[in-house]
Amino acid sequence: MKEITINDIKLVQNNSAWKLQGLKEDEDAITEKTEELVLKITTLGFADVLGTKENSDYSLSHPALDFSVLIDDKNVSYKFSKHKKENHYVLKVSTLPFYFKIDEITVKELLGFKREVLVKKKSPPVNETDLKPQDDQPAITSPD
Picture 1 (cartoon, helix red, strand yellow):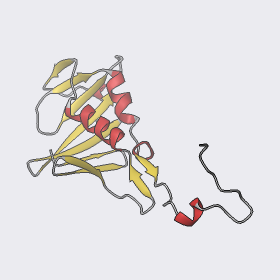
Picture 2 (cartoon, rainbow, N blue to C red):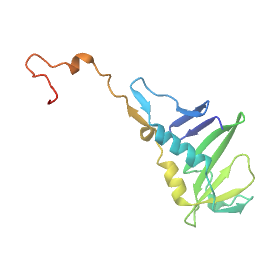
Picture 3 (spheres, rainbow, N blue to C red):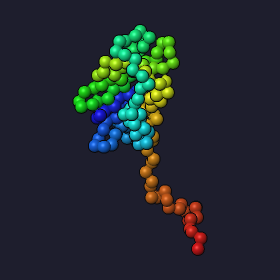
Picture 4 (tube, rainbow, N blue to C red):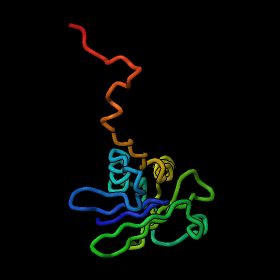
């Protein structure tokens, strides 16, 4: 897997690390959250196989979540839709003929990953003059 595009997030694998694309100059990626998202996608499991025939109850024409991954230079799409009559989601992977039953919590967790969850503002650089006492401020010294 070389690339993941989900919600408003694009991650690209650079050597063994995943890098969030589109960071502004004053932003940093939150590495732990990025790794958590990659782990959730790479370990995605299903509750059951629903077969190979699409059912109108699957609602795949209006997916709740649609993301893609780049695997071996091939773009693979994952579409998740809420089942119309049952309390679970249906997953259709573009490279497989099967429809999968997915637990609701799995999809809700993935939906929770938005760009603002993976990004933080950079801390301003420390200026050495800010560390020196001002004329009207006493110097801080350690007790002997």
